[in-house]
Length: 55
Image 1: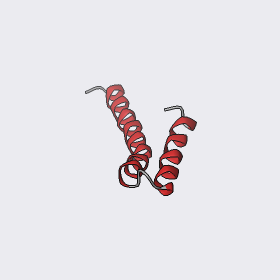
Image 2 (image 1 turned 135 degrees about the vertical axis):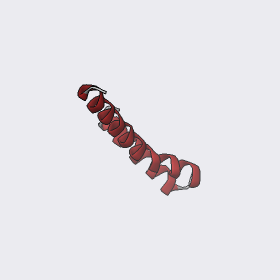
Image 3 (image 1 turned 90 degrees about the horizontal axis):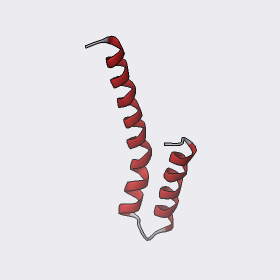
């Protein structure tokens, strides 16, 4: 495989890892604590982070 393709795949994998890492707390908060204030705050924080990073 060419060096350019390898580095593209590595950067794509890193971006996906960031996306999953940032969205996971919100998803867990929504699923586990859906009706509580803590769950809503966790979801809002996660979504705000995604918006700030323009993902």
